[in-house]
Length: 160
Image (cartoon, rainbow, N blue to C red):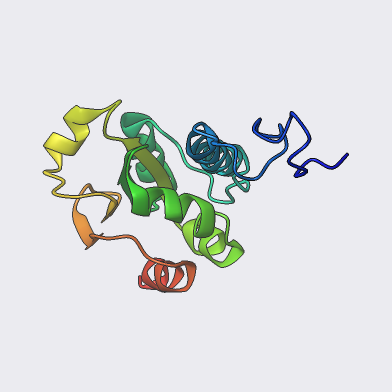
């Protein structure tokens, strides 16, 4: 006896493997799989950050004293965890050897504006990322007001 045989009493019952069986949860499952995949990629990308080669300090006052003592300019970098261009620079610029070599001529200080908002206010930082080069006497020598790739930023640091 065949499934589609009129003499078969099971003919009117949908077969459990039938492609015509309604599957109301299929779109929900597909959306869940897509969402879970995106979250996995985002999570892995947050954990898989290359090691930075620039040796950043995070305290302004000790860096100023060190800049004076070593007669080196201060490189102030104003950033935030939520800043997209800042995170791009974290992955692609601070990991570059040419940038690290150029930054060695400075006392580099990374200022997280959410942890040290008073410094962002003191320097009247209008956007992020924002960079200041300050000479050992405390004068602002140069500013850079945007994100950049490694080549551009290493070139900017090399201007002395």
